[in-house]
Length: 86
Image (tube, rainbow, N blue to C red):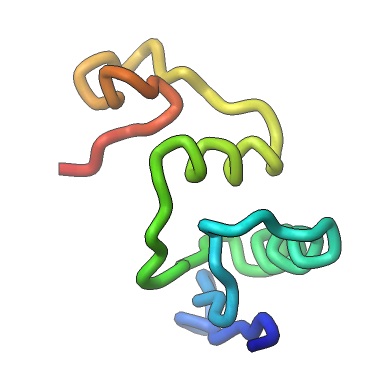
């Protein structure tokens, strides 16, 4: 299925469909995701079955990740790049 976008509102956010973040993305696919991020600011990827390591690897394609040193209570104990949403 080709990648498709569904805006979530008039001002901000889009859902990306037709992509499996558990599999390596080609540069072309990532370029489309990156452009969607630049255009919409927030991206929603529903029903992804990925590991924490895959999540971090995907996120690193956008640039250097923060280790959230100022939020030690909220970061994952084994993966400081991930903030816990509780």
